[in-house]
Structures are given as C-alpha cells and as structure tokens.
Length: 179
Image (cartoon, rainbow, N blue to C red; front, top):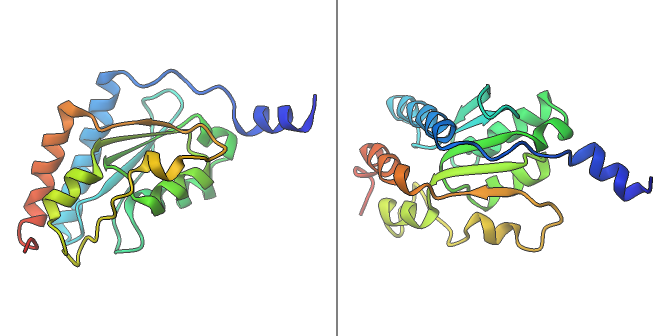
C-alpha cells in the first residue's frame, strides 16, 4: 500500500449515503430552533448542527457568537477537538445559511465530509441588504471556495423547500438592521 492509499484510507473513508429528505428536514429544523434561540439572545441568526455518520445522531450544535466566530467555523473547530479527521469525514454539517468563505475553509481543514445548507448566501445578501455593517456578505459561494481543493467535500444546498422558512425565521432579526 503506498502513502496515498494509506492517507485515503485513514482520512477519507467511504462516506455514508446522502441524508434522506426527512433527515435533512429534521436537522435543518434543529438549526432553525438554535437560530431562534440566538435571536432571543441578541445574536445573529446563524446556526449549525453536526450529525454523525448514521445521518441521524446530533453530535454538536452551535450558533453565531460574533462577527468572526460564526456558527459553522466555531462548530468545526469544536468538532476537531472532539473527533478524528477520519470520523468527521463521515459526518454532515447542517446550517441554516450557505457557509461563508471562512466557514467553508474551516470545514475543509477540519475534514467534515458533507455540508448541507438551507438558504443561499445570495438570498442572505438580499435579506440583509447591501452595505449592512452587521453582515457584509461576500459574493463567494461555498462551491467556489472549494474549487481546486484536494478534498471532495459533498455540498448539498440550497434546499428549495426549506429556504423560505429560513429566510422568514431570519428576517425577525434582519428587518431592524436593513437600510
């Protein structure tokens, strides 16, 4: 076995089948609940959930802390402290919104194998409004961030049937900050 095969077997085991629509709905609903709790605590409406290889067990949850400690990147760093790269490659990170460049890169380096998001960053930019200092959305979709990467992260999203629900739940927060 050469070095490349050892790395692939050690760090990139076979991923489980993609989640079913029911599993996706359940995980995104959990994200929306976490996001609502964040809003109640005057935090920005972003949330992430890490689900295990069985596409069912919730391992970790997180919401935004501040403008540099986003839900997805904070959860990914926490996951790296608790689980091996091999295990994380078989897990799925669910999030209400498409991960930004920082969060996508953190998931990449953490070795989380799949990202599922409900609503696109393009929708987020429209919701928050241009020039909103609370959320300076970049026109950098997560798939673009991963172009040319050496890992084959599985990206699923936006989820059309869940996008409006996330936008509506988030607008409770953003409407007071739009210009």
